[in-house]
Image 1 (cartoon, protein in one colour):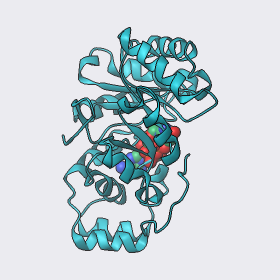
Image 2 (cartoon, rainbow, N blue to C red):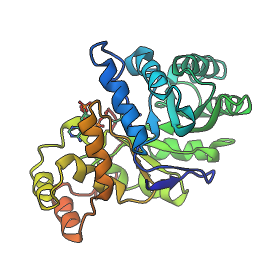
Image 3 (cartoon, rainbow, N blue to C red):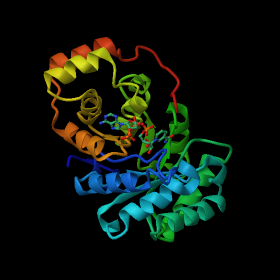
Image 4 (cartoon, helix red, strand yellow):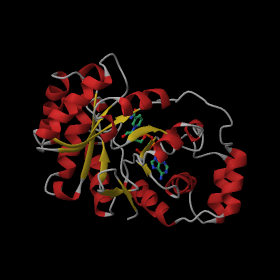
Length: 277
Ligand code: NDP
């Protein structure tokens, strides 16, 4: 598995697994657990979840999927902005740990910016680190100005990642946010890497996929995975999708492919506000 280096020096897989909309249906439960486990066995050991997903249901499902293999997994969860206060974040983290059935979250993210000052959330994250409940902390959905403010706050330079919406149809971050993160050696975690499935019918992706005897999803993932400092976290709830996404690691896009993708999905030529789903 290709790895990405966190600012701490720790390596994490470049291809992980998302869990939004998991843990919401008893009928899909077994398939979702089996898919996550198959992904772990293939080396997609970074699992992204959040207290928000399924109102705690996704964390519970992840807890079941990683039982007996916790040591293989790099576990990422997120705190709601309204819980991200000095005391609120600690209580929220303890609830997440209980649902995940573990004693430590590897990376704990502020899900998006809310009313609590960033400096206060950092203090809470540092307290959680001191008590061993989280190992690293990071942020999600922070645009350039928020990121700059974070980096100037006490301890803010310890941010491990920024998780943002990034795929071929959402390239705005390439103008300013991604360069800022690169300069500071902060990895970018790309969420909704296949635009929740909406990218699958794009003609350019279909043409390039045919050339590689691959699928449009694999081309969309390969486009992200070829970039340094980018971690992609597709969500897949079937074995076939998990295997297909894993195989994207061996798709090598050519200069011609990249030029065609740039024509179909032009990079930004001006600053655009960060989009979020
Ligand atoms: P994705 O872009 O990962 O798309 C998921 C959808 O694509 C599902 O319907 C899935 O179907 C389908 N799919 C997956 N693999 C394939 C494939 N190979 N071929 C065809 N279809 C496929 O969207 P998400 O929004 O789920 O983003 C990924 C993760 O990022 C989330 O699950 C979550 O963990 C995180 N996220 C974070 C956000 C934040 O604010 N921080 C916001 C949004 C997402 P099926 O499930 O049936 O396999």
